[in-house]
Structures are given as structure tokens and as C-alpha cells.
Image (tube, rainbow, N blue to C red; front, side):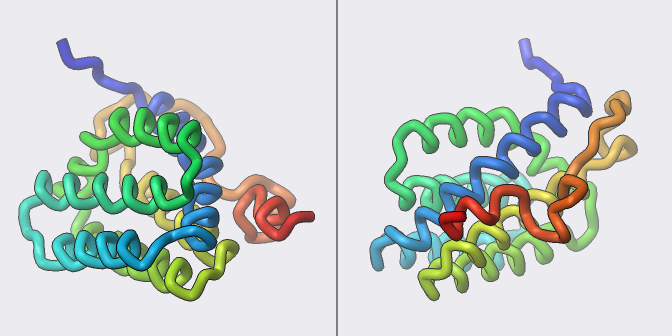
Length: 172
């Protein structure tokens, strides 16, 4: 039996990912090995040439896993893997149903990789936050056919356009 998630469930999953995955990405910017960077770049290249949404989503999941693992935080990695498994089918759906979403996501992935290669943890975290926010934005009620729930998504009031928790990455 396949458990269908409500719109609220999808939003909850993405809100948690938007809090935790930028942290893992910031850690990856500090700790990623050359081999890890090359593996992520190869996956990005595969995504850029892929036309099948399900295959693209598989590469996408692997890309995120490589980035998360590069942060060398086993507990955070386990939590993120669980959240990604819960959201994978919706990533595939967003690629199939939203024109140009794969191209936009690939550009967002490139931005994440540029920040990791530059060893810039704040830029990496911010790029990941914007990427996840973009994916969540592509998952609309119309696309998923899910019941709406009034949940604020994205930046919290008072963050002045910055990702929540950015000060923590700067050590403040």
C-alpha cells in the first residue's frame, strides 16, 4: 500500500529539509574531498543531459546524497535520507508537470556546486535553501491535487531575505 502525502505533509517535509539540508551543504563546502566534488559534478552532468523524469529524479537524489554525505555528519545524513525518500516521488512529479523545472533545478545545482568548490559554506547553504524552496514552489495544489493547508513556506518574517539560521553558519 502506497501512502499518499497531503499537501501539509509535503510542506512539512520541505520545511524540515530547508532547515537541515543547508547545514549539511555548508559542512560539505568545508569538508568535501576532490573525489566527492567530482562525483557530484558527474551526477550534475548526467542530470543536464537526462530527458526521462524518473531517471533525472534518481540522479537528483544521488546528487543530494553525495552532498549530504560530504558533510561527514552521520546523524544528519540519516535524517536527510529519510526525508528525501519521502519526497522523491514529488520531485519526479514536479519535473514531469512543471515546464522547465529540470533546467531550473540544474542551474540551482550548479550554484550549489560553485559554492562548494569555492569552499564558501554560507553561499552553499543559501543556494541549497533557495533550491529546496524552488522545488517546493513547483509543487502546487493543482499539480499534486492535494488539499490545501495554510502553512507559511520559505523565509520567515524578520529574516531580511536571508535563509533562517544563516547566522549560525557564520558562528554568531
